[in-house]
Image (cartoon, rainbow, N blue to C red; front, side):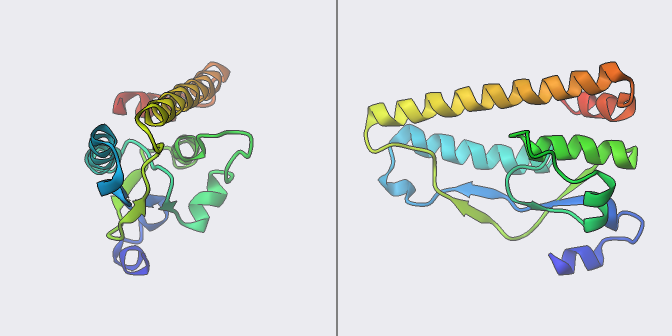
Length: 161
C-alpha cells in the first residue's frame, strides 16, 4: 500500500481509494457446486466491474486520512458505508473517485451452509440484505439530490451505473 501511495502522483494521491480484490475461495472444495460458482462470479465482478470500472469500494479498502476528513468520515447509522463513503468522497472532491487495485488479495470464506437447504437459506438472506442495502443507498442518494447539495456527485455516480 505504501509503495502504491508513494508512486501515485501528488495531485491525485489524496483522492484515490485503494481496493484489494476479494476472493471467496476458502474451503471451496468442501462447498456445493453453485456456492463455488457464486464465489467465483463474485470475485470476477469485484475485479472486473467494481474496481475495473471505478464503481465503488467494497468491504476492505484504504483511503488517505485527508480524504476521510474531507468526506466527514463515515455515518455510523448506515450499513453500506463503503458505497456511501464513495458518494461522500465525490461530494467533497467534486469529481469522480478513482478506485485503484491493490495487489494484495483478500481471501474470504463464502457465505454458505452445511447442507443444500442451509445453502439456499443463506443465499436468500444475502439477497435480502443486498436488496435492503441497495434501497438504503438509493434513499441516501435521492435525499441528497432533493436537498440540492449533491447534484454533481449524484450525476457522476448515476452515470457510472
